[in-house]
Image 1 (cartoon, rainbow, N blue to C red):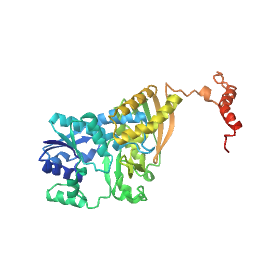
Image 2: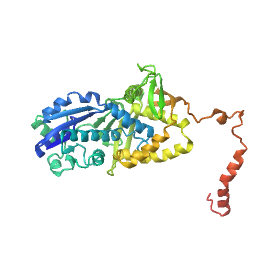
Image 3: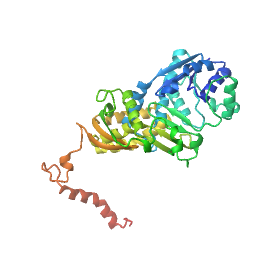
Image 4: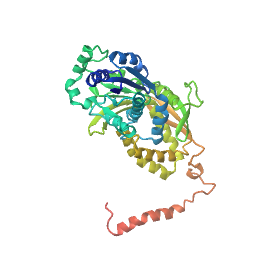
Length: 415
């Protein structure tokens, strides 16, 4: 039996690799998706093979992740529960998709993951597998009683790793768990389970990897201009960007914005969110590039989207964010909503200028060849073109007031 395992090289997946090999007498293919973890990938193949994998596949999916997952998400402008940029959520469907491709290429009968039975990732991996390859078995060790009995806690996992000469750097009490990709880094569990703990306090400063503490960020603001075509950022201009003004791939845009935003302490979020399985959990996130891109896109939409199109789009965003968070990326309803979002982006073309300063994203200008903002109409000065007649507002107000007057005469207006 062949099993493709989502492998990170950490304690959990290292133990799971060895356990699957022994329990199922299986040929384990360790898989890691390169979606922007950077130094975390160093030495991963050697570690997987030493732990018992017959093969380790590391796929560079950064371009696909940026273009086909992050950019559609940014076109939508969706935030889960109005705060979370969906950095972990949006990565899981891509990882599962590639695992399925490898399973088919190698003739594997199953895929496996190390997501716990309490979290969201188990759902995201398995809903993707159900949509793309219902014939392939999914093995989730944390939901197998035998596995949980053998490993009731981290101490038992560390002891197992030591006994089997599995090289993992783990302590009996890990302060938090971390997940990194091109869009963000998330931190949860451990000391962060105390929701009164101030994660931004100086003593926790070393936890953050992508961004400077806003208190220590430069005292001088930095400007960046973002060009958009159909809601997708195609070019950046800033003094410290080497290829400033030249066409860029989505990956290049994200890499530049992460560095730029990180320097100025942009994109830190500390929230308590509602997991799909029903419990609340606390997460701390760094999303420097994503926060800048989201803000700029929203500013450009403010001048290019028709009012009613914008209202309809905003009305579907909570549902869209929920679908991504829950793991329904490949579900028909997400495709349906994405088609509507794509249609809304036809005229989201133009440039946004932002000022970055100590954790803040400050709008410093926006312009578009497709702008619906008309200064002649909006001005408080005299309208030389007579495009708007203020006298028309009298009838407009009377018509909107009619039902209120009727209700008042009927005694239905409460004060």
